[in-house]
Length: 340
Image (tube, rainbow, N blue to C red; front, side):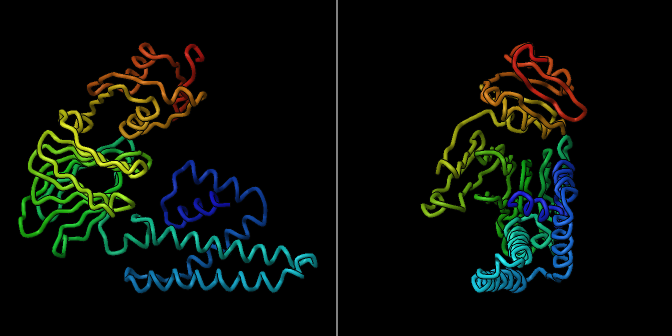
């Protein structure tokens, strides 16, 4: 049910993909009880009138916790009745409460949920696209596919705060009195005025910052790394990495032009796992991938492409690597050599 709760939360938050929506519809069609549970949740969700204040956010979460505690007390008192026909009503009641708690948690914890975007400007870039826009201070942001940012109009406060999920190139207008801060899930980047690339996709293991001009501070904000206050300062030619799972912060000297090659629809892979390569192809071309053999995900590939069509990219990869593929509408299925 955890997966179903997540799908319901995404649906209510209007942040559900077509594939996930298909899964949710399948669950709804499976039984009348599922449909009844969903309708009851929808009614409760629609009844929640939330504003952007932290007090309201706290109130909602506390109410959910109180309801969960109340249901637990009821369930303890009703144990004897479980075998006398009342089990379904109790189970449904607990399920509703837990589901509502999951929805509230999602809304409070996800930076791009409906609740957490109230009062913000939100820009989204679908997979297969690039997007360019200017902020009120004159800073320019170029977003890669499957990315989103949020910010307050006119960037009020003592810092110019931006929230990023995905990848974007920033050309920041200099203001020494008001630093520019990019917030991510687990790190932030702070600058006065510079140009740099930030990559922070939720399904990637590392967050990266690559500097073209100026100087930036790259800082972890969660876990052990945050407690140790281990920040790195980057100048042109530097690329910083933060790996929260491995508790690693690192800095390398690289060719930064390769990190912004995506802006010209160029791709560069050096000993890259096929699973990571397909993520880049999804973001650039908007097509999804499926593997018939999970061992193929670890296949290492080195290749470069300059503004090639997806079909050409796949043909070249197939000729130079140990796999075959098949295109099914907007899905590419990757299998073993000569499988397709």
